[in-house]
Length: 178
Image (cartoon, rainbow, N blue to C red; front, side, top):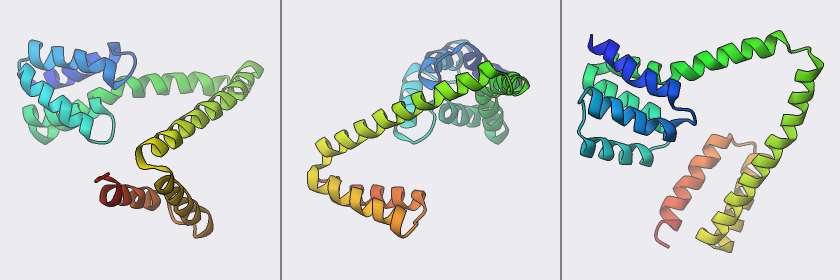
């Protein structure tokens, strides 16, 4: 019975929590604190703070932790599945519709119109990151990291994951004290 409760506690917020993790957090809190009483409000707040400090989607991190606390490894797996299942089902359904109409001129036009929008959004995000790094790190650090990253990626073909880890380590050791 506990595994069914774990599933419901994370599946329902996933269905009605339009907007991703931040929109589902209050719904998850309602389920795990008030409905099932697995955590206190204070403990949930601590878990939320820890989850925000870690990389990745907040709802899945919280689901994994709470599921493990309540039902062990199987509880964690069920909670994680229940968290991603609504999005997974919606994507499968929508992709099947898109695949069915992939040769439609309207779908092709829609896809063609979406690509520049995504490019602009990525460009704006890159500019904001660039400006933020300039403000937070200084012009010389920013120029150094940009040139080294460019050389590593383009000239020496280093995998982007290693460049990112290297930049993070550089920032931790040399920029964390500024």
